[in-house]
Structures are given as structure tokens and as C-alpha cells.
Length: 181
Image (cartoon, rainbow, N blue to C red):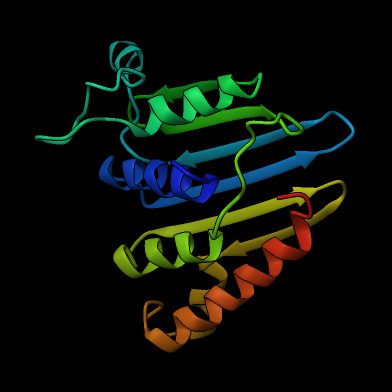
């Protein structure tokens, strides 16, 4: 995958396939420590020990006639940048995927278009709640669909005009926060 936004889209789709009603995405850049951390947490079905051992295998998938490349590719990207990938999960309690990267590594991927990733998730799965938190050296931005839903009342969150406003807000928030990405 060319950038982090595509990795995030894939991992979030896995969460939704696992029955998640809340998907939280967090990106933290710590320039003093030269670390970029990506965390995706959900409240889906979770995984037992046996399943967690299989998810890094690119030839394993829970989807029929499909390959499970999302986790293996994210793990490869992390390890290629002197980082690692960890998965914490418990059946019935959800899953947390944490990838850490050496931020200055020559193979570090760009962030990509997080606004389009979030809008794609919202348009395709408007019933799911999402949160996106970006922080870098003391600056932060947070987007939560629960806040948007409270403002919208009965207006669907996936209307084109609403998605356009959400796209612009996320685009601006991520640009202001994630300077080096």
C-alpha cells in the first residue's frame, strides 16, 4: 500500500467486518523520540489466541475467496521502518492494532488522504461510529462522529453535503496537526 490512509482503511474495514460499532483511529507523531504510532481500536468480536496467530499470514482471511493482506502489509511496513506491529484482542471485547515506525526512516510512507479514507468509511458504513485523533508534538486534532450526529439530529451523516463538510474539516485538522506527514 502506498500510504497510511490505505492501511487504515483496510484495518477499519476488518473492524467493521468483525461487527464493530465503534472504530477509533489514533496517529501520534513524537519527533523528539523519532516515533510515529498508528493505533486502530474497535469494539468488534475480538479474536482468540489461535486466530491472532493467523492474522499476519497473507494467505489467511476470514472473508470467502480473499487474501488477508492488510495486517501482513502493515506489519511489513512497520518492520521495514525499524518498528513493529502488535495486536491485542479478546473475544467479545474487540481488537487493538498498534504499529510503530521510526519516523525518520527512509522507507517511511506518507500519511496519504485521511479525509477521503474517513469519508469512504462514513459513506459505506454510516451506522458505525468513528473517532480520529491526530497528535504531534503537543498539537492535536480530534474528530468524532458522535459529536457530528449530535449536531445533525435526524439528518443522515452520509448525505453528500455533510460528507463534504466532514472531508474539509478532517483535511484541515490533519494538515494542521501532522506537520511532517
